[in-house]
Image 1 (cartoon, rainbow, N blue to C red):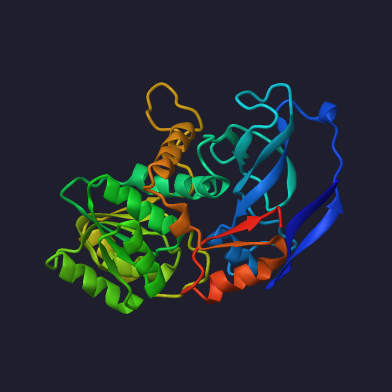
Image 2: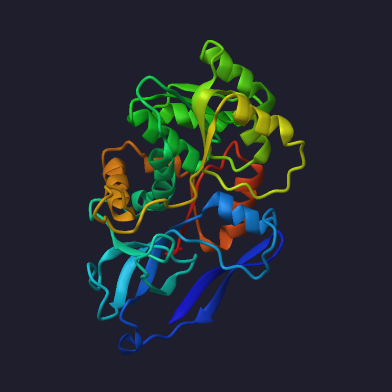
Length: 340
């Protein structure tokens, strides 16, 4: 059997390669499975930070990807809840076939059976939904509060939709007009596509000068976080959903002073805050979030047709990375079709 996979070889260079792939079901570890991929989703923030060397301290080659949908070809003896021929979501790299071990931990690799009513394209949203759920988990907002979401990539859009569904007023901001128009098509009511240096003023105008009660940064851009803190209301909350990666030089004293004087709370919301399984004493878990995200996709709160802008062949990987990085007025979220 031949396996195709994506590899980042150096800055600005990615390609689809081929290699022989052999496996024997008897050699699988108890928690392993061999999965044939149908679609995998590009995680724009994480992957672009590697493609264009925005992130510091890593080395090439890199084998990107952690959101795949596929069919189980073989499984280990102790891998419960899934069977051969089941369609699953799994946290594996971009490849036509993967051998992967289910770890059953918050940050570890996962193999999870998907609702059969979901199409592969819809199921591709699961991981982005799980990440966005961390904004909901961390958020202390109430019905009376105004939430600002900065950055309307796929994760920011989903986070904004989930927070709006919780009943709060949501202001959605991104300098790219295309993303704001997509947000409106998805049902977000108040958007702003002005430049970053005008966003804080818009937020204050929309809140009668008070500022945002809750500010969610989904951009991962340090200067945007500074703007969000400046536009926050007294006793407000700042949620860092995106991962800041690029170097940023500034005098941090005004930033710290704003946090101090306005008595702000700053929360990190990296990937999955909750335990994998529901345990006594907590209602939240990755498994419960998984069920919730699937339900929200099925009821069309999260619309794959609007959130996934392109489906590409594996050999088009650099076209997709270039589009996501430099053509944000057309490229939003991209899936790779491994049948092509």
